[in-house]
Image 1: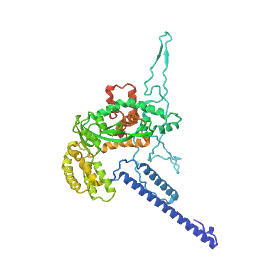
Image 2: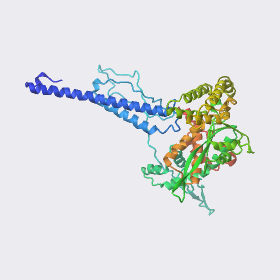
Image 3: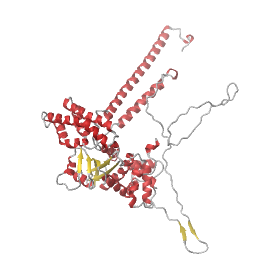
Image 4: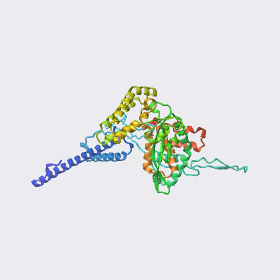
Length: 524
């Protein structure tokens, strides 16, 4: 505040000072208003993105597609908040509690303690201060990943009394004969590529920052050799899954470079999954990806050879080959996906007012609400409650379906959506006859999402064999995730066991759910 002695005696000068002060205050108010407006607009954008990504009415096929935009928007909001706080004098700030979902730091992380003592332990009165309590806070710190060198020395010994030769311990076996990496290093490359979606050339760049000049092609050689050694475990995984009587199946595109044409061809990853957790089944969850050069039903038939039971799928026509009347293989029943039936009507609603489609979505939503209440119950209890509550709704929907199909143009979007439901009606209502069957195919669709994300980063596989390696390693990593097992720890243990001649007759011991180390869920 200015002292009156500092004020000029000239009236014109006083007016100029007053105008400048008022203008400065107006500018500050306008600046705050602009920031508030920017914050409000950004918050609305974030809300819109979250609604599109996670809203109840959303039928997104890829929940990761908005992540980058959301990160940028939220970072921009944080910058504006920081600017706003910096412009307000410290004494006049009104602090609001931050809305944050930080959670707690896991107990298994090592703690480095630091104690900050007062400058003096002597009171102003001359007495000695004693501790009556303390405030404790925790912050997350990181030690950047550092490569190290394992030096192995094998001394040679000879006898001074005779000439019987030299004694030396044999060289330990290695995954890469005469190669640089330990099994842990190879496992790290695999997890970085197939779990964290870092292409090999990016990993080579990261290594170069620590002075490691390792070419991408060298990393690719490590991946290929590891995939070869892991192949028996992958085959044991598929065999274990096919011994089940209830599985999921889905497929996703896998672009593969076509040598000589400078183009890519469309291969496919076929996912075969088991997830008995919703009804308390004892078999561990798992997923196995199989690469095939096409999408024809013949590939599904080949993959499923030896399987008998219920297969939950979407409405892709290729699966019809599995239930063809002239098929002589084992018995398979197809259960279809209500989420796909609902998705077709949701697309109609997005394009305008559609009372019939809205009614259909509402009816399917009632089935999903019942299913949410049944999750975790045993198959008998699920079946009984479905018969009591869901069966009447499905019977009523069948009448509704027949009524509207007779009145809606067959070639219209609504007519096609209703025809889709009618075509797969028997398989859609199969969940009413077996408490183990889910209402949709979402379990296997979730396992395919990491494949799609890796495909975005890698763009395409370089060869059919490369796609098969991709399928082998991704199967084991995604099965680890389903069983809350750390993929890195699992791969280190498994590759080490393979290098040390783990017996083929005991290969099942190397399946992810048999991994002996502590599960990730136990660390929380």
